[in-house]
Each structure stands twice: as C-alpha cells, then as structure tokens.
Image 1 (cartoon, one colour):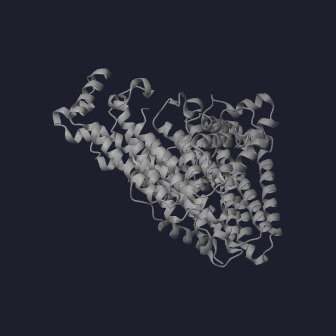
Image 2: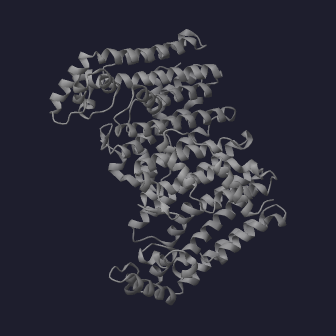
Image 3: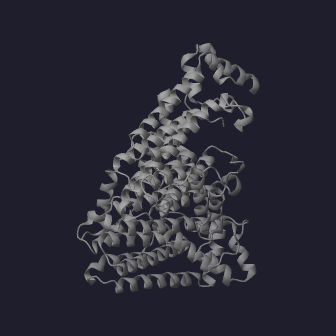
Length: 320
Length: 320
C-alpha cells in the first residue's frame, strides 16, 4: 500500500501524461492550464486509497482517479464563471485568462474528457462506475445551484445549508471513495460504507472551513480571517447565529455600515456570546463520528484503515 | 419498420415521459423547457432509423436517441449563451429567461442526463456506445470553438470552413447514425458506413443552409433572406467569393456603409458573377454522393434503405 504522498505523486505523474489534442489550441490550452494549477489532489488520492483497500494494483483505479480530478476541475472552471472569481489557487481563472465563452466550452470538453477516462475501466465494473459517477456529478451540480440560490435568499435553514454542502462538496468525496472501491473490487456493502465515510468527511471538512474562516490562526490560515463575515456569507456559523440571536443583534450579521475590521470583531463577539464555534464544532464532530463508524464497519483488516483514520484526524486538527 | 413521422412521435412520447428531479426547481425547469421547445427531432429519429435497419425492436435504441437529443439541446443552451442569442425556435433562450449562470449549470446537468440515458444500454454494447458518444461530443465542442474563432479571423480557408461544419454539425448526425447502428447490432463495417452517411448528409445540410440563406424563396424560407450577408458571416459562399473575386470587389463582402437591402443585392450580384451558388451546390452534391455511396455499400436489404434515400432527396430539394 502507498501512503497519501506517494499516491499524490502517482496522480501528478498520470496527469502530466494525459494527452489532449493540439487543436483547437484555445480549447485545450485552458484544460492543460487548470489541470496543472496544482492543489492537493485530495479527490483522486481518495479514489486510489479506496481501491487499494481491495486491490494491490493501484493502477487499476488510475483512470477513475483522473476522471474525478478532471470533473472536479471542470466544476472549478464553470463555478468560477458563475462566481465571477478572478483568482484560483493564486492564478488567473480560466474565464479571466481566455474569456467566458472559452471557459464554458473548455469546461464542457472536460466533462467529455472525464467520461473518456471512465470508459476505460474494465467492462465488468463499467456500469456501476458510470452510475456512481453520474449520480455524483448530478449532485455536485445541484449543490452549486442551491449555493447560488442561497445568496439571494434570507430564509435559508441550517438543514438546507447542510444539504447544500453535502451536495456541493461532500458527494464528490463520497463518490471518489465509492468509485475507488468499485474498481478495486469491493462488495456493494463496503462500497456504500466508503461512500458514507467520504460524504461525512466532506461535510465535516466544509464545516471546519466555516469555523477556520472566523477562528483560524491568521498566520496559518493563508487568507483573510473573517472573509465570510465581511461578505455576509451564509455559513453554518452565520445561520446558527441568525437563529439564536435576538433580532436586533442579528441585523449585525448583514450590516453594511461598518468597517471590515469592526464588523469582523463585532460578529465574532456575537458568535462567542451564543457559543457558535462550539455548536459548529459539535456538528463537525458528529459527521466525523459518522465517518469513523462507517470505517469501523468496513470489512477490511484494521491495519489497512490507518490512512483513513489519519484523514479524519487531519480534519479535526487542521488549522488552515 | 416505422416511417420518420412515426419515429418522431415515438421520440416525443419518450421525451414527455422523462422524469427529471423536482428540486432544485430552477435547475431542472430550464431542461424541461428546452427539451419541450419542439423541433424536428432529426437526430434521435436518425438513431432509431439506423437501429431499425438491424433490429425490429425500435425501443432498443430509445435511450441512445434520448441521449443524443439531450446532448443536442445541451449544446443549444450553451451555444446560445456564447452567441448571445435572444431567441431559439421563436421562444426565449434559456439564458435570457433564467440568466447565464443557470443556463451554464442546467446545460452541465443535461450532459449528465445524456450520460445517464447512455448508461442504460445493454452491457454488451455499452463500451462502443460510450466511445462513439464521447468522440461525437468532443467533435461538436471543437466545432463550436472553431466557429467562434472564425468570427475573429479574416483568413479562414474553405477547407477550414468545411472542417468546422463537419465538426459542429455533421459529426453529431454521423454519431447518431453510428450509435443507432451499434445498439441495433450492426457489424462494425455497417456502423462505419452509417457514420459516413450521416456525416456527409450533415455537411450537405449545412451547405444547403448557406445557399438557402441567400437564394431561398423568401415566402418559404421563414427567416430574412440574406441574413448571413448582412452579418458578414463566413459561410461557404462568402469564403468562395472572397477567394475568387478581385480584391476591390471583395471589400463589398464586409462593407459596413450600405443599407442591408443594398448589401444583400450587391453581394448576391457578386455571388452570381462568380457562379458561387453553382460551386456551393456542387460541393453539397459531392457530399450527398458520398452519403449515397455509403448507403449503397451498406449490407442491408435495399428496400430498408428507402427512408435513408428520402433523407438525401429532402436535402437536395428543400426550400427552407
């Protein structure tokens, strides 16, 4: 078995070997660009990790891992258009660099490229692989739609928020795990357990993101602490405070007449008053517990689960 | 065997029975909308026609037909964003009605829906179906990219134009034919012949479009005759005239200082002088001949080819 760093290297090498057509250059150059912007390759690493639980030959899962990474990058390209985002991983976004039309079209081709990778799996797992991938892709799109809609709504409930992050973020981690399990030859039950593991890990990861955006150590966090507060983003913390605070306090959450520093300070004060961090942490831990339970039920030798337990621990302890 | 009208009815009925999720409503409503705007359903009908050559049960090809029609409508949704088009089949385009972000995302989900339809074919043809579909989808995207690039270029050659319409339009007709053949149980050779038939038919269809835009009977054409001339569109006729005319005459093709009526009249005069219509018709007929040759080589009873020969004749004779 490989450790996560080795798996990441396998992914990087495989990505560097993908052959995209030369023409039309402006269609494929953005794909090479976004695929090589780096990142931790968490999702494809998860595919390989899951597969290796059931099959020693990690290469058996490589095309599925590439499909998942290509699909993930496709969603970044299209989401960045919708969010009007200028930067991605510190570099220009595709639509900033090549224009929205090319970004739409290159994204579309990436979806095709994902499906081309998928079609290369062994025929005995092709159908379940496609079903799992399509359900995953559909969920991710639904999550993005909900995320956009929530920006325009003032009555988003916490359950709705949790469902949105499940779809937008967690379903892809669950799908990556399940796809790896399927190509590795897992039983249906083990594949489902790994799906549950990945999905709960994903929800926990996003909740931790929400927490760190307010309570992260500025030196380690890497971006402005309080960014979500300044932009009135409807995070778990925001929605929980909206629910618990008095109505006159709650207006602070969407105040437009304060300097960014003052707003961050005052909203953080409100969060502290209602112990929002603790509540968010409890919700996160609930999902990590569910992830751990799925892992415990998984019918593989305990020793093989080490990397998976480490993932849970990393989320619990991460500071950025 | 069914005739094309019956096949269209089968498609309409199948489309009306597709079940899309209810939520998020704003993601799926645009899909129902575009899928039910009508149209002649040429591509899915071609899938069924091709399948029926080899298999009496037309239902065997229905999911592939739906995949092709969904994919085609997905390209319309995204192309309309890129082309900034307000109308599609006389109705508001999706991005006009719901905004570009929803149009991007609903289009993305339509691509997933196409793949879901495809995944329902029998396992023994799943892999070739996916390979053909993915190659087709990739070609269509490449064609759209070339089409956009040509708008910005002044040195497009006729060969480049023919390659662009092959990719943007004809590959999908070829793909529809080939996919129908595969699910119907055709030999590889017959499937390739039907691909060639569909692709050449598609190129001929687009060339006839170019011709009718200038020489169509205004009463039958249904849109403004000369629209391509007014918008300086780089059609086969435009590019051929650009090549054959004297340089002082050629400036007329992109003139901005004339009234639309005058420009249409003068450019048509130029086309007539260099017999552009005849040259375009010859190119179209070349592709119809290739289509007919593929049909002749096809190893099925001649009587079964009637509908296919009728398609060729329809393109030759169509006036709108």
